[in-house]
Image (spheres, rainbow, N blue to C red):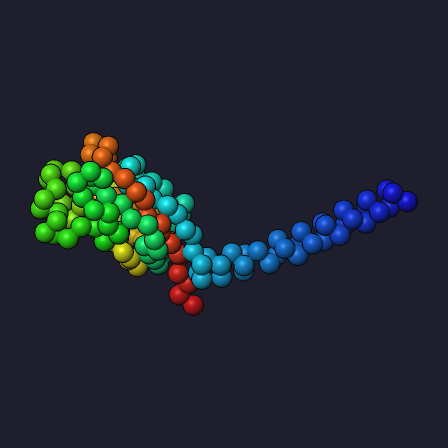
Length: 160
């Protein structure tokens, strides 16, 4: 009797797993498009993988959804992924930017060697395949006085 119940229980679990596996691609697709992946990006680390691999043609959205950071916790305020104003930027010791055309503290992204501004949000079409990486606009050698982290939401958008 016990072995029949065990067999019945295992068969029920297996059938449920098959149904769940068959439904999961649709769930993953709609979940990804609607909810996206959320990730904390630290100001104290260099390039950080966002947990998303993009392929050429993918339409990718990155949004700042919370948190703040600073390039020097002793001297400068905490800012969002937009970074500092240009006025405040001029007060910061120059020579440590990843993108000179953007202010310190701005969220920047990279796929392979292509570096771009993300700021508080961006939608872009991937030109090459690779992992999406994110960081603060502050060079590795200058991260020692940084503090804080921001939270981002990354989505691969459906174009249907």
